[in-house]
Length: 170
Image (tube, rainbow, N blue to C red; front, side, top):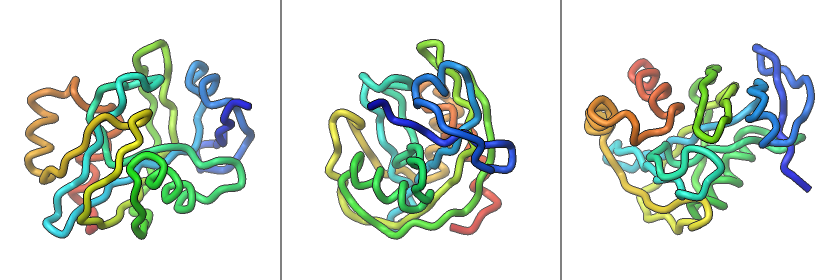
């Protein structure tokens, strides 16, 4: 069975469900989350998405992201995906949410109500190679410079989230 995701309205109210790939082909607004895990030095753990991912393969992104399953809360879904992709657990909290729409590679469209979650972790991840091909910690200042100099190396949602973090205490 193909994975279903939650379709939402502009207020994040559930309005239905759709198969994940079809929702991305049609550009339907759906619920997602983006996780940003920081170490005790305040550096952000980035992941390099596996090259075989259905979109944005090989790009650097936030620590982890995904879609809650029907009936699953955003924090619970975030903890599940963090363990599945990065092989570790940490406490997560939601710091903000926003919507965005962007055309991606492979003819897909991201139209997402994105819940941004943060956590703290100082260890090394245990990567799921089907999802992630690399990782690193980077300071927010260095990351901003890298994104400015080479924006094509980073996912669209990370480039949207980064400036929003300046006004939020993590």
